[in-house]
Length: 390
Image (tube, rainbow, N blue to C red; front, side):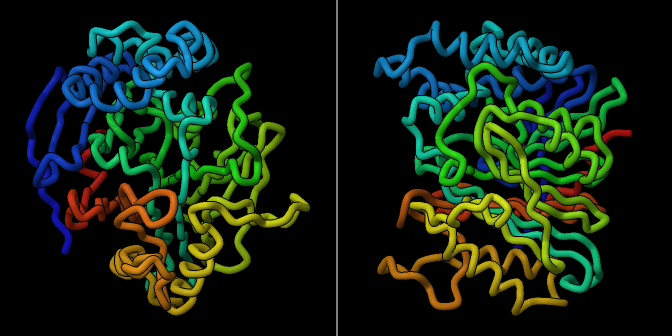
């Protein structure tokens, strides 16, 4: 089943908050300058960010894993000072809307990376992405699908699809993330350029370069400024990330790829056909390193989704992707499922599937689902054309 209801539940200035039939997935539609959109965001999520701040920031202080001074310097002032003016204005607006100091807002936004730095978090865990286009799909269009897998604690944090409609000439962007996190996680702009991130620490190392800008914040800027996947790819090639990640990139033309990033460089993994599967292992042979598995069974997920895509070749569309990404990785007894997929509705290795997202970049249709039994939703359909404002 899919549902399409968007119910207006809150407003702040030109910003609106909707639910999607219940309060499990919220949608924000923001409009104005980046400062104004930040104000709207902060006001609209004010009642939602307490849990994630406590778990991802305050608990580190309470356990003496870091100090407020260290966090503010390495993941507050560093990120803010090197950010674009757009990003700084967004942070300032969120701080105004929340009634928080700017440094606290930035630290919350960067708290996943901060926990990565402190080695207190299982990195970005076990995500899976499939791109299909050309003769792999029913109509030649590009389709994207991803499972966002992470820790069990994240099930309790509010999920927010935030749609930014800037008035400064930047592209509109829709970004799926947890409330309080504004870096690019699973995002698409109004030109249909799509990007998602995966943990790359199994190959690149669990290291953070704390003298560089935030790559998560930078990718948001890439989408605000670029019209094609090629343009965003060029921006990746010109960057030196502060953390080892895998970024999957697609657009309506069928230009689909994966950028595997270390602290030294980014390398593009190009498709061999008209599908591309990405997990948490570097799969570009040019690195000259052994393709390692992960504690989240990346190579099994990779084989499963590659096989399911091959079986559906020529017939892939949004409905088929929803079916494929609903196939579990494990049986109930913990063995791998025969003809399995990648979805983990509960923790059976290192993490579970917090949410799933399907997109059609050229029509700007997306579907979102939470598969965890205690929170399970239908696939929620969102028509971004109605949320992107000309």
